[in-house]
Image (cartoon, rainbow, N blue to C red):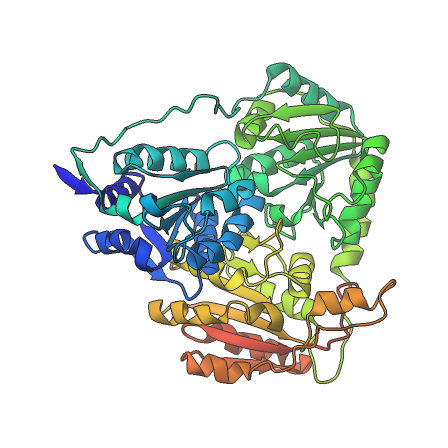
Length: 544
C-alpha cells in the first residue's frame, strides 16, 4: 500500500488515539489538513491566532489526561505558536505540536515563510523533530507521544516540510511500541527513601504538605488527600496545585507564595517538616528557599530529578511518579505525628481568613466578593480557567474550590490563556460546566476566539473584570521604586457588550454589590455562553 507522508501522519495520530486537533491552515501544512478530510473521526477547531492552538490543546490535555495536539503552518504560523508551546512547557502539559515547513531542499535559504522552528523552541520543548523522510513519520509520532506523556510531561514539536508530506511511501511501517535509549523516567520511589519519609512524618510535630501541579499531572489527588487525612497533615498548595482539596476541607490552608493566603504562608513559615509533592519550588511560591531550608526539614517528591535541589536542597529527596510514591507511602504502617496542637493553632488562622469581609465601593464590585459568591454557585466539578493578572490572584485566593479544576498559566504567566484553554476543556468534556475569569487586558488578547465558541455553540461563562488598566502592573507601579502608574491605561478598549453581541453572545453588567446575587443567578442561568462585565475600581489591589 502506497501512502503520502500527510496520510501517514494522520494515520499515526489515529493510532495514538487522537480525537481532536486545534490548528490554523497554511500553504505548508495543506497536505496534512487535506488528509484530515478522510478522517471525520478526528475533530478540528480552527483557531483565530496560532498561539491559541497551543492553549486550547493545553486545556484539552489538562482535563482529559491525554496528549493535546495542535497543528499550524510554517513561518509566522510556527512562531506565533511558540508562546503556546512555552506555556505548556513551563506547566508540564503533555502536547504534540505539528508545524508545516518549506520544502526540505530549500531549507537554510531564507525563502518565503521559512524559520528554524526546531531551533527556536529547543529551550522549551522536551524534544523536537525535523522530519526529512516520510517513512520515519510513524516512528517519530510514536516517540513524540511517548515523550510528551511520560516522566515529567511536556510539549514535543514535529516539523514536517511540505515535500515530505507529499512524498509517497510504499508499505509504511507503524510501530506498536517505542523504546528510546537514554530515556527511562523513574516511576517507583527508592524503598529506603520511602522509609525515611515515613519516619520523618511520624516524628514531626508541625508538618505541612505542599501540593503542586505535579499532583494533578500524576492523577494523584486521591492519594494525596488520603495521606493528608490518614496522618491529619495540613495542606498548602502552589497555584498549580489549587483545587486538590476543596476549600471547606478542614486540612486545607490555601495557597502559598507572594500572592498567597496569609494562613498558608504562616503555616509554611512555622512548620518543622515541609513535604513538597510535585512542586517546582518556584519563586512565586517559595519566596525565600534558603530560609525555609535553614529553618525546617524538607522532603521533595518529584518525577523530574532536575527539579530536586535546583532551587532548594531537600533533606530527603525522592524521585519517581508522584502517584506511585504516595501509594508506596500509604502501604506503610507508621504512627501518626502528634500534631493536634499545631492543627488547632492553624484553624484560627484559617477561620479569620475565610470570615474576612471585603471593602465596598459605589459603582463597582470587589473581585473577591464576586469570586466568593460565584464559586458557591458553580457545579461541584466545574472547571474554572483563570487568566493572568489581578484576576488570577483574586480567583486563586478567594474562589471557593469544590471538586473541580482551576486551570491557569502558572509558570510563564501568559495573558490570554484562559479563554482558549476553556475552548479546549469544552472540546474534551462538553457537558462539564466551564467558566473563564479574565481582566479587560487579558480578554483583549484572546477575544477573537469567541469565533471558535460561537462556531461550536459552546456554553462558556466569561467573567470579565473591567478596571480600564493593566491592573497588576498598575498596582506594582504605585510602589517604590516606581514614580507612579505609566503605560497601563487601556484607553481605546472597545464596548465589550457590543463585541459580545457581534459574536452573538449575550452579556450582563455587574456594578452594584447589592444586586450581585441576582446578577450572578441570571448570568449562570443563560443558555449557552454569556459574558459578565464586572466594573472594578482601578485602585483596587490584590492586598485590599
